[in-house]
Image (cartoon, rainbow, N blue to C red; front, side, top):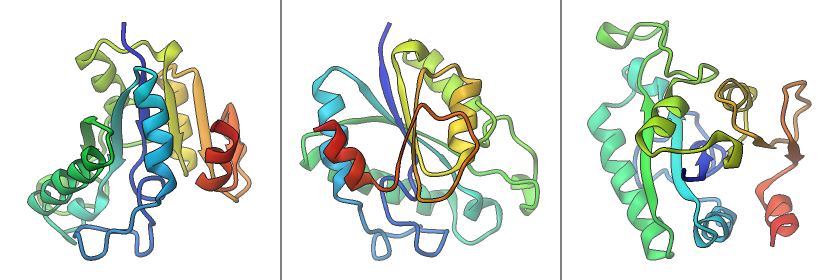
Length: 176
């Protein structure tokens, strides 16, 4: 079985300044994520992004916008010697519009995206890691039986994380 590093996007890979980042001009990487990802990639982890994208459901941007940004983002990682194997996203929200208005098992804190990724890539949850900045990331990881759940947040959280750091820089220092 494979081991994976699962990454939330907004707040972990990039700064989540307006809550609905959807174009290259607004996208600002958190530079530490490249060193952290490369560390795990070089240790044989598959890198997978799992991200809620309610901005699609709310009509703020299209799936095409999201896919174009994702392709660009994956290429930026590749330039920095890290391969993102796949991106799983949930475009649905209970308050969405049209076809995107629904509760979804894929939307974190539900484990759907993580389970799909583990099935697709034969991933062992016991050997895998989730890095997220919200309680919903940690809950989804716990529900997926992911053993290591890293919370990056200055907020108090009663969720079941295995380690907590105030920011990515602090985690990077602890890791490297």
